[in-house]
Length: 558
Picture 1 (cartoon, rainbow, N blue to C red):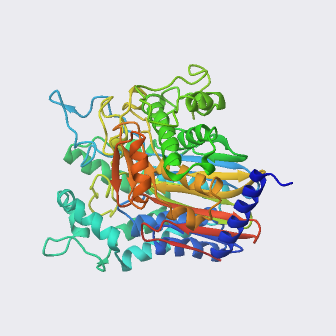
Picture 2 (picture 1 turned 180 degrees about the horizontal axis):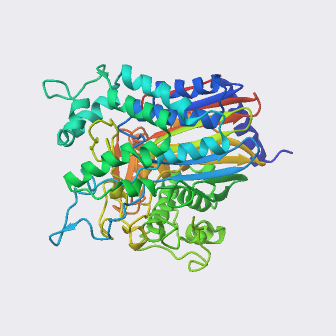
């Protein structure tokens, strides 16, 4: 006699196989990004003899042109790469605080300046994206950085039609963008109004910068003309970044975070990403509950409580591992079981402070927001998260360069306990120091089964990156969903403080009522985030890409 649980498992497997059959896959290569031109750039790189690593860099550089409000070479990135030979490489291209940065640099006249870390000359860290791209290509790519810069430069020079999201971000930040003439010259019309949907955005200076890097190499950016232009502008406008800061920047290889979830292996970015640690931590807590058998409201409740516990730990423990001790015990299965025991299935539980993981003072991670996913049939898998932080970063474009500088200094705890632009708070572990890298929520993640990669995933959207990523993984593993179906599911997010549950209204009214009855304070949302992924469909031997239906994008392959 077949047991009921076995019957349920068989049904889930059959439904998953059916779902896969309904979603388009590709035999050689697949990519998913938030912008069709970036996905096309990835595919074109493979057609020119590149692999998934080349494709990811091509897409990243192109996004810096066509999705510049989110990311670009004036910002940073994390890459998690599984190469064809089976090696795992995690590259930290996170921005770095200038040498003249200090813990209290935003306390001016005895009062915290809440805007200085977000807008203007003091908001930017030293960008690392280009160094990270170059390192990834040298280790695992087939093409050169110049091969991938030039097609993106052509798009910048000829222009592209901006979409609804780009136009909305321009309108929302117009007042701040106007403060900087070189920025306004690019994004505003002659009558002083920002470009609108369907307008052509031409970026000739950015094209020149891309071509100069292609011709002269990274030294032109990090040790030559570009770095000097930044220093000169900063001196005139109250900034502290120097050409020496650029020359001192290095991309760093780090050991990955490794976790497990229901027989799958999770491989993700280590600190200064908080994403890898807390995706693994939350999944570890969730494994102690039969998530797939819960009704929707109970599933939301339990996962929310797990999120809350992890984000409390994030606020206290996480920072740049080159400066602070970040305990590996945060992803210890024993600690996950301890945290799971604190969750009450019937109502919310207060989380007054962080937990204390085992061996917190000795076993530590080693020293040393746009997401895209690519994969190829040879076994190269890439999860790449890149960002300039908030929309249009610091809003600063150094005249003649076309490059938007990040505002990643706001990702530090500008003062311990003071919320940043995403309402996140941090402690001393994430305080500002010269050469330090701010904590990030970027969560590029690979999932393996029996030693083989089956999923590359990540997201954009501040701290919701972490929860989007783990919800996608749960939807596929716990609910047996295929990628596009999983991305359509309603989302929710809890980050400990403020103590509220951000939840999409695409949940039915009864579920929302039941969730509220558990004691959660709901912050209802029409939709948030942007998640991308590629999955390996072993049955059909196809790579299945998927992009988030909440935003424009494209999933494609060959």
